Length: 163
Ligand SMILES: Cc1cc2nc3c(=O)[nH]c(=O)nc-3n(C[C@H](O)[C@H](O)[C@H](O)COP(=O)(O)O)c2cc1C
Image (tube, rainbow, N blue to C red):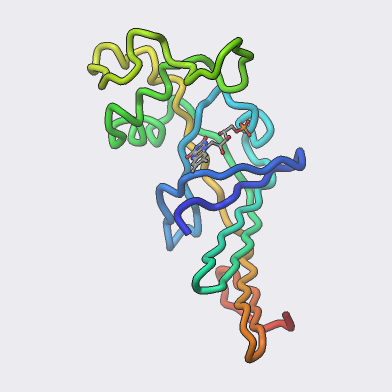
């Protein structure tokens, strides 16, 4: 369940890599490009759905929560300093969604296939944004021939509901 689907209020959805789950706070952390369209949609308090699925375990978890984008904060600084230079390299490129004549990574030619240095990465730093999703409720569903199971869980506990 490392790559959930993140849904936003504009009826769009996309895969993102889960970086952290803070259990006491019930928050999820993701990294993204501050120039990507989803950051404007989420802003500082937009509704966010997070859909997890484990095909083998036949478990789906639908989380509803509130998102917030952090850029240039201590949290974003920490996200930058704990990423390796290959991960940071993505933020050196053109903003997501620009039209190109040919298939393109969006990265400048001089960095294609290379690990950038700290100095070369400096201009990319402000393009990294952190998405924090505070989960309000999780809807857990287990698919089974012997009878499906479903539960609604929040920070105060949970209850079984019919599938
Ligand atoms: C396996 C996989 C992992 C991805 N991980 C991320 C991620 O961690 N952060 C991110 O912003 N985009 C990630 N993407 C790209 C997004 O799905 C999406 O296409 C991109 O962020 C642009 O989204 P937007 O136009 O809705 O802003 C990933 C895509 C794939 C296929």
